[in-house]
Image (cartoon, rainbow, N blue to C red; front, side, top):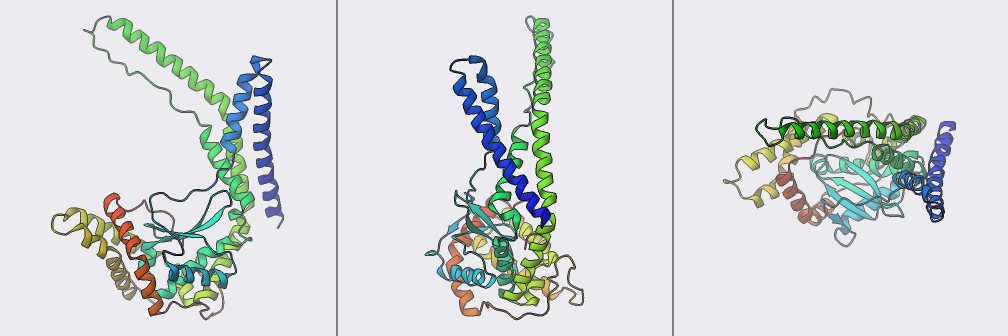
Length: 364
C-alpha cells in the first residue's frame, strides 16, 4: 500500500516537472523578446518538456480494426467476459499476428482496445479462449496500477524522455582518399579536422545530456520497483478472474508456454513453406489454411503432451476449482468465426508477406 502511494507521488512529481519545464520554457521564450540571450535556455527547457510530455496512445495501423457492427457476436462475447470480470467494456478490437491477448489504450480519453492475437485464438480450445480474454480484460481493473492513467503515462513519458535525449552519432568521413587524387593531402587533413570536431561535439552533447538521461532512467526504475508488488497482486487477481470466468482447468491450460512456443514455431514453418513453394500453391489457399493448420497442429501438440506434468507454478491461478461463468458453445463459435473470416485473411496475408513477428514474452 505504501509503495503504491509512493509510486503515485513520484508519478505526480514527474508530471509536475514536465509542466514546469514547459511553463519555464515559454516564459524564457517570451522574455527573449527583450533579451535575446534567453532564447537558448528557453529552447532547452521546451525540448525537455516536450520530450517528457505524455502522448496519447494510438491504434496499430498495420492490423485490421473491428467495431461492434463488424463483429457483433465477438463483441457480445467480450462484453460478457468484461461484465463477469467486473471491468469496463472495450470500444475496439484489433486482430494481431502475435501469440497474445492484451488491452491497449488509445486517444486522449485512453479508451481500451483489445489486441486479440489470432495464433492464440486458433491454438486454444473455446473455453480457453474465454480464459485468455478474462485474463487480459482483468488488467483494466483499477488495482492494476501500472495500467492506471497517472502511473502509466509517467512510465511512458520517462521511457520516451530517456531515449529521446540520447546523443545521435555524429557524421564521420572515412579515411582513405586516393593518393593519386588531386590535392589528396589537403582532403585527408580536412577529414581529420572534421572528425575531430565531431568527436568534441559528441563529448559536449554527452556531458550536457547525461544528467537528464540518468535522472529519467533512474526515476523510471524507481517507479517500476515501487509498483512491482502491486503488479504481482494484480497478476494473481487476473488469474483468479480467468478461473472464475472460464473455469479453473481453462485458466491453467491457457498459461501453457509449451503450446505457445510450439504454435509459434509451426507458424514460422508454414510461412517458410508458403514462400518456398509459392509457385505450386495459390496465395489465397495459403491465407485460408494458415489458421486452420495452426489449430490442427495445436490439437496434435495437446494430444501428445504429458498430462501428468503438473501445472506451471509461475502461471497457476492457485484457486479452488471454479465452474465457468461464461461459455463459448459451438453455435456461438461458428458465428464468431464467420465474422472474423475477412479479417483473418487480411492478417494471414500480412504474415505471409512480412513473416511472423519477433517472438516476445508470452502474455496470456
